[in-house]
Image (cartoon, rainbow over all chains, first blue to last red; front, side):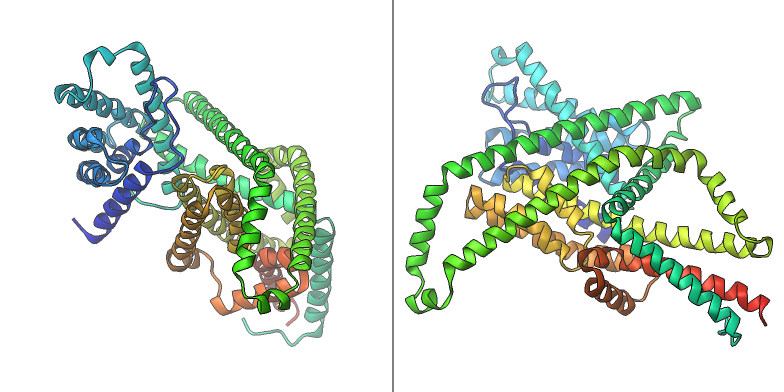
Length: 161
Length: 346
């Protein structure tokens, strides 16, 4: 891994942690008591722009470091592996499918999160309602929009994939 | 090419110099219209770049031209809607913040009195605080009124002019260039063509570099303000990026609205905003300017500083922004005219 790649991953991990602790986080209108996880698109962005290794590292390191911050909770600890897998899938599909389709690997992240939360009793299966599904689709949509915007600005600035 | 000793060459060049100066003076006189025109040019460059990137990406998939245009149109409509939603959300947040300010005014006044009581009496007596606050308030409100009135005429002019500019550029560009070249005697066609190509190329590179710089600085500010929790983060970030176009003074002007709104939320938020602004300027001055901008803008750094200072002295902020593009136009027109005339008047 060259120095450029290390810097890119470092910057994205920092962005992930900062967004996880952002003060402007909006509540999810479909899931009472839950906020929109705006930082979830960052591992996918890393995968889309820089490949599978970057996606996995940003997902794992970013989630791990966020779990250590004041915004961290048990959900953050359980999300480490799912976010790494999500970033890896995005990196694997990079170049094979259009970026908006690759960005939908956010859904994979959400599904894996639910599996981990339920497996470790952080969430009850009775909470798997239609409202939760709409909420996760809404978050996926917001994540795809944010990813396309940031990737577009990165490419406009002359950034190389 | 060596300078020509023939007096006729210099007579013609002087005439051209006077004509160009009158043209730019007219542009300054109709400044609102000129600023609208320049915003139109900036938008055209941005759209051209996005169009080229989109074409490059879509070339991988075997799609018909009609389908590519349809997807491009849908994508453009989608982003316009997203921008309108985010922008109106930002404006609503700022309106709430301003409304709550009047409610908190008495608290702010009491806080200010408390702060003033901490300052040593000698310093309090030496500085005419009341006059200072009144003058600052009057000047600030006058500046806001001027800016808002200019902005509303720019927006009105923009709605009329910018769509026509887009149509002219994307449909009639080559025809117009052809007309301009044919307007001079035939012996000057080659030189005219070369000069126009050089001018558009250099101006395009310069404007594209400045727009890229502004977009990156604006994006960094939007990100930082979002993390800090500033109300109206999108609009304030865009303003910070827009003001970054103004050399030297721009970052300070862009910081003022963001800091004012951040102070309403508390000193911690104001500190995060300050950190964001400093970080954006560090990225701008240590990465963007040396590695990205300087390689595209073919100009000596000392010369660019001198031009900006001269522009500031002559025309204020407008002079600072347009000093370099105006210099590029003068340079190319006078240089290529001299080269063409020197061949004729040996």
